[in-house]
Length: 66
Image (cartoon, rainbow, N blue to C red; front, top):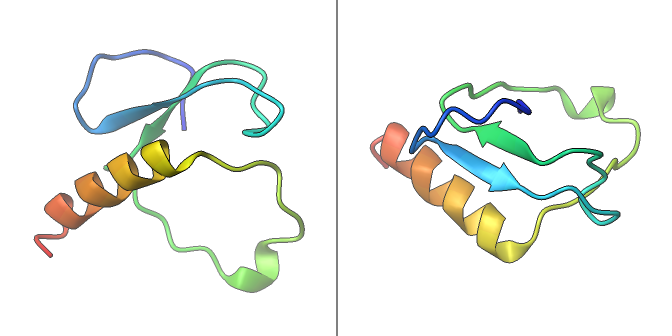
């Protein structure tokens, strides 16, 4: 994620709120896919809504040609 708005179609906006756990509006960089071992995930910091989640999933599926 980044807080810098770059007007790229591969970036999905996530609003700052208590639900997302973000202090500033941020942008999910779908082109920067990372694999993280589940053991490194200690606790949940926040969540995004179904609309943001669907946008990210659609872009990632397109990038992976799936």
